[in-house]
Length: 136
Image (cartoon, rainbow, N blue to C red):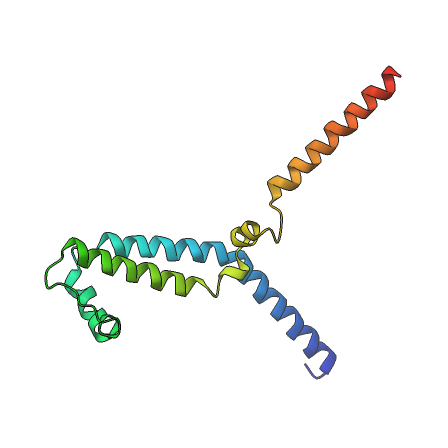
């Protein structure tokens, strides 16, 4: 560690490894966020008072000039579910640029299956050209 060159190389490698791990686990993190949100939504009716208390402490509904009913009604459950969706989306935003699924949806990178399909098409085209040369 006495050499600045070794320090610089170690910093470069560690940054690369961290970004590699972030990219590797980004889709897993998005899946965990979605599953956690679904579990929260599943438990809205049973934990309605706790959700109501947390949302009232955050002053979200007073900011929007809304209020939650005292008892778990369809409207109250729906409003809490919307807040869970919004929170999950906001938590997911920093992870999206690293997600392979999101990058494929945007067309930034092709999937492994698309690359394999292109190889198969190239092989088929190559074989057709060989067959045509044999006929001629």
